[in-house]
Image 1 (cartoon, one colour):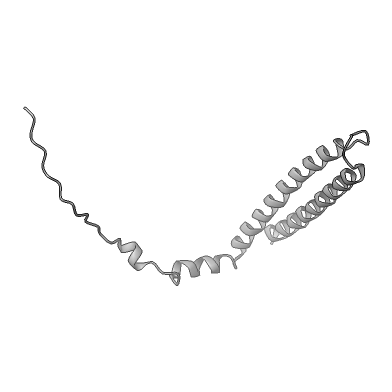
Image 2 (cartoon, helix red, strand yellow):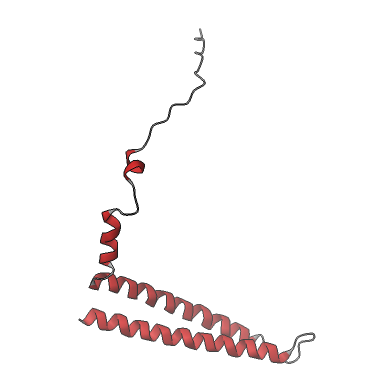
Length: 115
């Protein structure tokens, strides 16, 4: 035999979170994070992130520049050969810039790890 369902109240009860009440942007935990970035391990982490970003950007731009350069041919109808050649040139220029930035990031990271 089934029990009859109880009538549910139409009000919603909510509670306040103690975390939300005590949260503020001037918390001491944020001050600790800012101080950590000024220490040697904090600088090493920032340098490693920059090194990884620049290295991966170099690899991606290099592959895009190679694909762009191999797709340039003067026989294509309807496309300006000079604009295709210019895009290949600037793609390799950006690749060289990222390669240099990767090199300098590596030198900075290496000099901090030796100390």
